Image 1 (cartoon, helix red, strand yellow):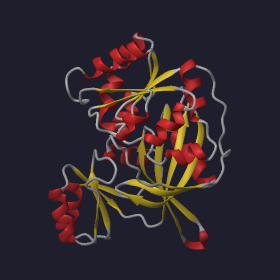
Image 2 (cartoon, one colour):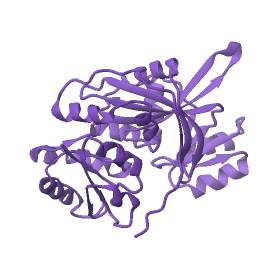
Image 3 (cartoon, one colour):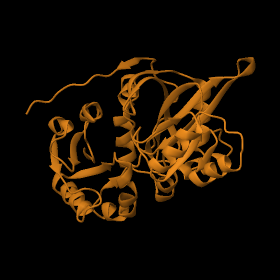
Length: 317
């Protein structure tokens, strides 16, 4: 089976895993990306916001007899879901959640409102107008806060705010910001896969031991039963399809009670998902079943606890 990945960048470990059972074609807006050297076929394409991007993807899929497209870059998701029928007319499955899901989770304010409306614990979050109103009215400010762009990705323009001076500066500095109460504790990422009906078939929590430029550098898979259960409960409040990456903060409160606060949902593969592959979860089988419309057997909790340490490697051309 042939599959296509968009915005391959440096997703070498993801490609290596998928190549174990697929012929993997990749695209990017630049040929100078490391992952291009590990694919079965690579194509340089226009940027997602340039004319002809979707046409070029469909042309490549037709040429390479691609059965499924797996997008990796959030900013292009809305464009692709709006063109889902065009892909389907060419016999191509777009492995991506529907438009409503993308609208909700590509926007951090909408994500916060989703959490609150579904009684999912999450740190208090404010628009820039709300936080400035709190300051100007003399409300007690419980520093620190986290400020980030409402449509941001990774750690770009994410800052910890310790006082009013910093807050006023970064509200002007960060474009379209949201301000979130700082949640102390241990940060986890949960690699999730959902079938076509939105049922969770795998959920693997990972402790983020070390993060570099927004992407995990050291991580350990942990069979944390409560995180798994609450992640499944979260996913039941909407309909995800395919790979999902969820982040939460866990801290120990009084009487040793664990508090779990969810902070982020990304409807795509996370950068640290190779750790979940190595823990024994067969994503290739999930993808095959999804493309064929076959049921996927649940493997909830059926993984090994392993540690992944990442490092940079050069490609010499």
